[in-house]
Length: 120
Image (cartoon, rainbow, N blue to C red; front, top):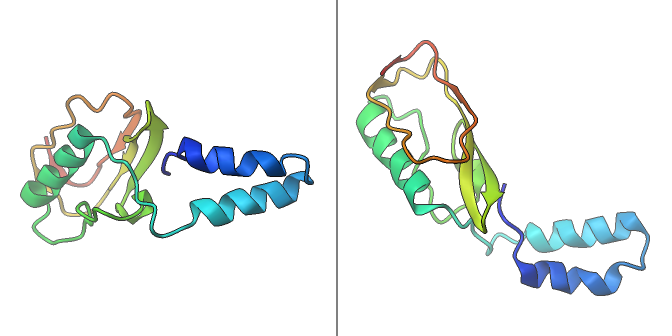
């Protein structure tokens, strides 16, 4: 999930008198533009990239897709916080991960599911 820039919200305002469904479709079309990449928080992105490099010997994770959409990060859900995309949940059970997983300073992280891996 990526942040919707104010410019997109301003572009939709003239259509607010239209029926709700039409407005929603316009917003979806504008925000689905593949040229708009996510605004990842530097700490969160760095921690995931380091974790994938150190902890993923099988190459199962896809935690280095920048620039791309946040949906490309295997098992990671993002939330918009303070104008940035922050890691909200990590769900990677049974992915043969091993080693240490450093999630420090991921202030929007709410749920971590890493069962059946060899992580500390």
